[in-house]
Length: 117
Image (tube, rainbow, N blue to C red; front, side, top):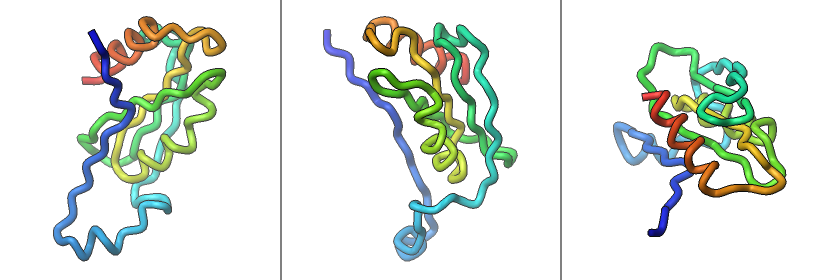
C-alpha cells in the first residue's frame, strides 16, 4: 500500500482574479500571529510549535513537518507566514530526526490532525 503525503494544502479565495493577482503572498498577511509551544509528546511528537492567527477564525489547518535532522524551530518562519494569511499551523518536532521512521512520523501527523479537528 502506498501512502501519499500532503504536507500543506492552501486554498485562497478572492472576490476577483484581479484581487488575487494583486496580492503579494511573499509578504506577511493581514493577521498577527501567536506562537506557543506544543507539549512534549503531543500526538507522539517530541514537542514543537503551534502558530495561530489572532483573529476569530475558523481557520484551516496545516501540519508543517521538518526534514531530516530538523526540528520545529526550522519551520517556524514558514508557519508564521501561513498563519498571517489565515491558517492554523502545527509544527511538530518529529522523534528520531537523525533516524527517521516513516511509520512513526505518519502516526504523529495523523494524531495531530485528529487532535485539531
